[in-house]
Image 1 (cartoon, rainbow over the protein chains, first blue to last red):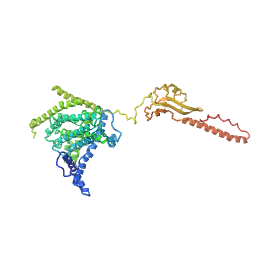
Image 2: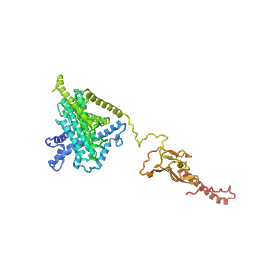
Image 3: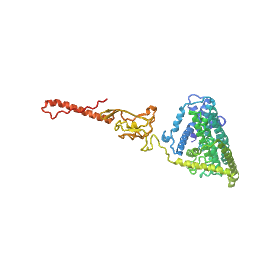
Image 4: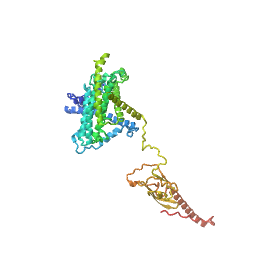
Length: 394
Length: 186
């Protein structure tokens, strides 16, 4: 188990450590492997560079994000189809499962256009920045007790900070496109993110107050148990509303309907990515689905008990101990929870109409922020005054 | 304050109601018909591309005369009782599918068909030829070939009988004159 997991972890630690401004790592399994199998001695700066490239972003992207995004795009189209009594993609492969691969190939070979009058440097950099933030977000997410890339003690804030990088990318894309629709979309994105970061952070502080740690892994470990009663969702009357507030704010953060104003296709053509084509466009697409998964994963880890499932995971732990079987089951349970939240996002997208920008602002400032503040105060009060009554507390 | 909280609750509740409605649709059977593979039944009186029974047509021009926009053109030669067809075109650039060509036909050989998709790359291609076979129809060809073969056979028989008759003392009966020749093929 350790042999299998350690390389992954060390690689991601290298990536996340570098991203978080920590000291440079000694090396990871890729550098070790390269040093071992290479007939000639590779100079260490090159080795570190290769290790960082192969061991972190590339590995993660290849192993998880791309297949997940392809599947999610397929699922989104299927959900959209069936909600409208259509079938959805069903031509390429069984049930149209290969549709995303076909689309990906198409996007790969499409012409890469840069509009005249565009700010070329920013235009080219924007999708890269957006994609980089999408990949970096995954660094702090634990998939199972032993399968995590890095266990940052400020995990949630790291994810929130890195996800905000995508907003800069969107702003860059909108500004550099030399297109009024793109600029409108980018400004809306900036407005929405600035307004919704506040309730998002406040709502996330509720489980932080409950668990006493910013580490996602620590919070998930604290929610293990036989009955699921340890899930923070059922802990006190303030966590459930906090979860709903978090989910609503996360929808706005990830530019999902009904908050998809940055790319409102009925008003702004395609918003900030109007001028993008081919692979650059698909980077934005990838980021959207990666961000959906990340916020859903945070929701699952902080509110829905992480990888614990009543009756199932404790049983596996009882039978097999906390070995690789337990970890495999944990990955399955955790992914199922996160993907269910992703499905709810799709479900909401095909249920609610897009709201106006002033309604977005009203909802953010007049409803979500005060309610999230109230929840935070309530949860803190509960932890301070009610939990000690039952003999709990720290 | 109460109105505010009521508003929050209403927003939450109506979202749930909407989601339950879409969930119902999500679980419903799709109504899609996979068009090129499967088609909805077309009503019998649908007026699509015409269908011509070439064998029955007698080249009487009734349909072309009935056509209010003169989109039917035909050309044929008579070969005895048969028709040697050159063309029977219907210009679908003009045709308005009024079905007026169908009623006057004395042989009931032109009908409105069910085919509605006839996409072409050039509008000249919309001047469709309704003939299943140019020239003579296969049936007519067969009949003519049969008649020709019979004629040949009879001529051969007569030829064979003539010298035999000269040698024989009394022919049973004189050879019949050959049947009138069929009109020459153009």
